[in-house]
Length: 439
Image (cartoon, rainbow, N blue to C red):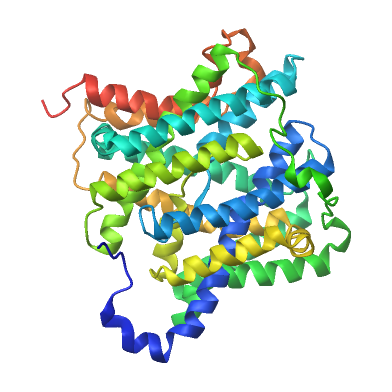
């Protein structure tokens, strides 16, 4: 029987002082899950021009199933307290496809149907890889260089998204100075508490930042609080992005994205090893892929951005040093409750995006340390520096190019080439397999 962290040696501490810590840590996990999730359905709703009710329904479904997926991973899957949520890689690809499709005047509904079909096929394939145990062997493709590339590019992509939210660019085309200043104060507060705060203040810096920032935002910008329409019957709608379609080019690109998205699993489980001082077992990889594959199928049916273990969970665990599963499961259960009770869901959905992004900005900075940790000990010469510099810098460069610029690229290749994260990871894998860098 595998046990990740809840050892018997902690039983005495658990009887005396763990309950309060567990509740506070559970609340912190709740806000972490919430802040990582809330912006995704809203941005997808905007990208696909979904009605307010459908967007609210997507948000509530995302809350409910994200909590379920987290509990499944903690109890059945890899059994680490790592958030299982909508993947940043998938999110970026879907938004890029929607932006380029809209710019070309093509049907977003047709794109949505192709995405749903491709996502479900991808989920089935991931489950099969997990059941067969192939995923354990595929991890060899994700060398330290590939994993470091993934960390660097994922951090850059998501930090860019968070920074735009912090500057108030989500609701406006220009920077909002007041919102930007408050975001900066929240970021500095969370970083200061994390670095210099004593004991519990350091452990719960993210939670303190969210609560303090939320209160300050409501006082300073009372007219800027978002209000979503009730979901109503839309909560139970299937395939909200559009009726299922079968464009081979888009589906092939989506399936390839799903396979590259496995890098989330390998990077996250590999990052768990130094935290828990034990290697991740083949059975953990197998079960993790089965759960992620199943969640991906559910995503295609209910119009949710597909799932993967959140590498950013490493940042939260590193920052708080609270490694138990019990708070994580509590936070996930509360997250399900948020989605199941419409009043609560709409209340928490009023959390200002800029506040959540400011706190996540600090948490995701830890990914940079994880990237450096993967290449620690490696020596680079003027020749071997290409091993890391090429995929990372090319991926970063592609992130700066607007989606409309790829309109001249064939539809089959466009979904991949316009996403710097996908291209960077794919190039790192190819270079690692094709070149014997040790020579």
